Image (cartoon, rainbow, N blue to C red; front, side, top):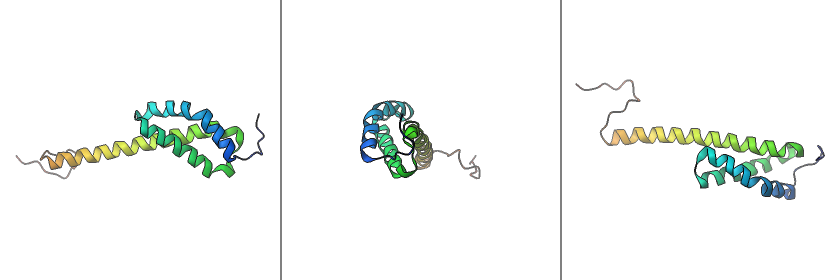
Length: 109
């Protein structure tokens, strides 16, 4: 069991990356269903872990990196959903269709 006073070093982070990259990718891929996005989220998770290395205890690294990655994936999906919503609204307006998202818009009879 790791000593609580140990800090996360570059070598230990590399070892954690080698151990956790594939399983973490598999979990996140099932959230986003896009390979490149899942890879980016996994890398961003380890980058954020590295930035907070002074506050991380060695025995909490694995659950922490999963939590970071799942939170990033959830935020990514929310952002994607919002972008899709607004881009569809824009397409409807450009194609001459009526938008159902503006309650102040009056329909012509």
